Length: 346
Image 1 (tube, rainbow, N blue to C red):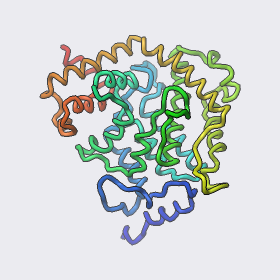
Image 2: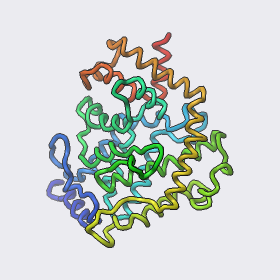
Image 3: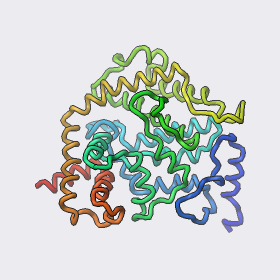
């Protein structure tokens, strides 16, 4: 009966009303392995659902965003960050008449490979593992190989591309190191990630007493707004306005870009630099951060010497033992890594 209703096909037909620059699920570059289409959902909707139901997504609720083991209940976690990115990206995509389903799937999946203790854990694994470690590459590895008992989630090329290419350089936003994403929806997620963390990290830093509202750069506040909501709204509206060509209005020959105006971009960059100087680098010297670094280092060294104690499924993900250990540690939550480190050092 469901097959005769042509539900997925009707949704795919509605996608024809999107911007000519929007990604259409029926024109996807495909999956790593061919499979029968879902009778109800488009390919991008199916990807979104697979991400939400996977184990790596659930574990994000116990992974650090910036502040390690905070005492308050309102600090951002990797999961709440992910949800904020997805919401912002969907709002922008909908406003620009782009594919909201694809945008949502990328936003929900972009940080699946993040380590315990946030960027602290990422930095330690990058220092220890001879091939280096980047959470965006690990996120792709999670959806391609690690999830679903080693079968992966078999996502579409467009979602995988957005996940892999969401990371940004520390400085020189939109500079030569900004990188390219294969879809406008992926570009939206990339910039939505920036909007989300710049704003919620300010809130968390104020909550932690590291900075004050009055201490924020005055030039940025006068342009972007005094409150979290005002700043987010300014950035989102500015992106929609300056990326309007992506909606299909105007010249349909030249490929549009997702961008901010010069003024808002400069103010956002200044806020981001402020956070690196006043928050992120300060946090790197805190006792919790130092302890987190030791935990990841201890786990890495221990399991390299005790491979027999590594969960056997991780040995199937690579022929290289170091890679297996990295996969195991990267998937841990803060709590699990802390408790396991205590257990192995007793």
